[in-house]
Picture 1 (cartoon, rainbow, N blue to C red):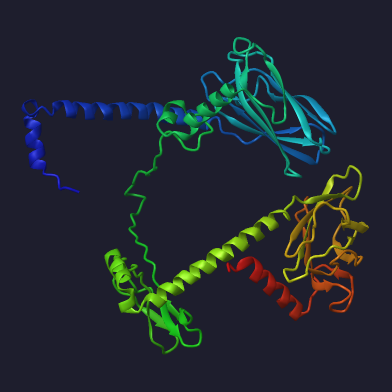
Picture 2: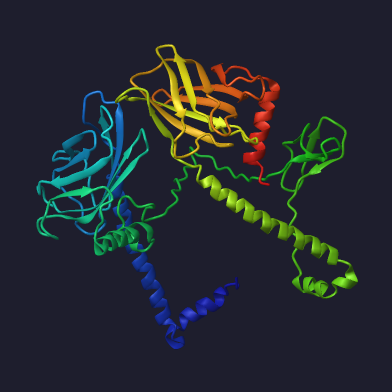
Amino acid sequence: PNPIDFDKVFTEFARLSESGNISVLVTIAFAFLIYFVALIFARRADKRDQSKIFPPPQINLVEEGTYYYDMVISTGVWRDSATTANVTISIKGDNNEHDLITLQKHGDLQEVFSRGSVNCFFLVTNESLGSLNEITLEHDNSGESPSWFVETVVIRDRQTEERWVFPINRWLALEKDDGQIEISVKSKAATSFSAEVRSRFGRKIADSHLWMSVFGKACSSTFTRILQTIVPQYNPQTDVNYTFTITQSSCLYWSEDEEKWTSDGCKVDVGSNTTHLKCLCNHLTSFGGNFIQAPNPIDFDKVFTEFARLSESGNISVLVTIACAFLIYFVALIFARRADKRDESKIFSPLQINLAEEGTYYYDMVISTGVWKDSATTANVTMSIKGDNDEHDLITLQKHGDLQEIFGRGSINGFVLVTNDSLGNLNEITLEQDNSGENPSWFVETVVIRDRQTEERWVFPINRWLALEKDDGQIEISVKSKAATSFSAEVRSRFGRKIADSHLW
């Protein structure tokens, strides 16, 4: 930057009326004045917003419920969008419904549905409501400011991760829109284009625009109006000032065995500083410190000159090699893209298997199929599980007639097992296939089962073929939790998985 000549600055101050710069000075001073005045109001508004932040309330629809829903209700950012009225919601699902659930009532310590707020609620029930078809949101037009602009209501089943969106984007007010204070909305119901624009435009301006949010920000915004660093007051009687710097360095030596730089047996001495690096090593080798090497700049003039004299320089072979490498890359890209599209057809959501009618206890199960050729199976697959408290036999995982091939090569398939109650500690599983279909042979890597309620996890390592023509010819295997597998089988499985999943080429 240009240096500031303060002598000239003060001289110009003395002759402002002659130079005509007084208007510039007044403009700058006026801009700073407006900024500091806005800063005062913004800071006060930030403090008011802090009082609106509170943890999501839990609403028990039944006593001692074990099934959870998360619900989020967004209030508009426009003026007077908040409501002081008593608010209730009714929810209708395929399996059950709940009427007039109280969300806000007079006497609450905090105003829940404030302007621009995004409020979360935990709903606790006995069991799943099924697919949610319709909600009814209403208020009783009470309080000083009952009018309410509602943007959206989103409900999520915590167990199945299923999500329902109910777009509203309208006023619930006697004096606005059609004068209704009650509305019934179906999941993903369409709203008018103007209502959608009005809602989204306001939310974007108030929450995502730095300058407009100073005046229109809602308490749910991603940042405060004033981005400030709090510097504590220094007290010389109780505080001590420290100045510290951070440098990154390491002592390395060249390993002839590993053919790379390594720090084994060496460390940086505490006597090192920003100008000198002191190394302590427990072996006699040539060592040094690391440093950052700036990349060489590319001289494009020289590049184009060399292109013009390829036949003289002998670099044409290099150019041909690079061109061939790029050609091979793009050909491989075509095949890889086709393979990616085939893989997309194998992706599907975890299958839910009901081991009991209207069960409320959930297990997550993951089965990994090998990545080697012909590891997939077309056979009918069943599983048996034995626990301390209960057991289930011949659970069907794949059968002929399924729309998708579940156990494809290299696949990691998820299942949700639903039971009446806990099976206790899982001791053993039995996995089997009936050797049917065009390619019944199956290489199974691992089976992992997790109790969703207790987060307890059981691993059943298999790492072998279930095939008549491979290994020992068995198509059924019983495995205990964390049972040991042979070293060769473990290496074969892990090596294949790492090559197929973790190596770029």
